[in-house]
Amino acid sequence: MAEADEPRRRAETLRAAFPPPQAPAPRHVPLARGILRDALPDFGEDVTFVTVRKIILPPGGTTGWHYHPGRLLVVVDQGVLTHTYADLTVETLAAGNCLVEARGAEHAHIGTNLGDSPLVLHAVYFQPRPESPLAVQVAAPVTPDQLAE
Image 1: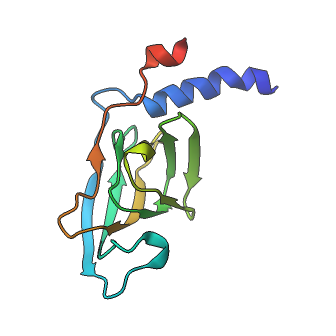
Image 2: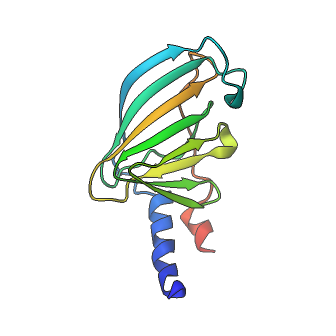
Image 3: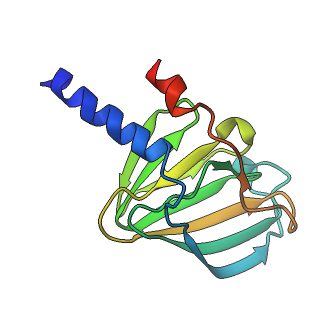
C-alpha cells in the first residue's frame, strides 16, 4: 500500500514546491508591532522588534520561496499549511497547530495552500532590527527537472 501512495506523494510534493506562476499570493494584514525591552534568550540577543500579522492564502496560493532574517512563530488558524523545506521535506499542519521557523537563508522554504478553502495563519516575527525585512524572497533550491532525475 505504501508504494502505491508514493506517486501521489511525489505529485503533491512537486505541486507544493513548484506552484504555477499564476498561483495566488497571500494577503498580509498587519496586526501589531512592538519593541522588546529585554532580549528573548532562545531567540538570540539581537532580537529587538516584534511584528504580528494575519496571513490569508487563497486556495492554490503560495508564499513563494523565502527565508526570514529572524525567527518566526506561525499558528495555523484555518485550513492546512503545506510547508516545504529546501531539502524538499514536507510538513503538513492543520488548524490548531504551530511551528517555529529558523532564521537565515539556509532555512529557505515555501508555504502552499493545496486545499479548497482559504488558509489563515497568524505569524509573530522576531526581527533583529525594526528595519529588517519580514521575509526575503529567493529562487527555488532545485528545479522540477532536477527533482525528476
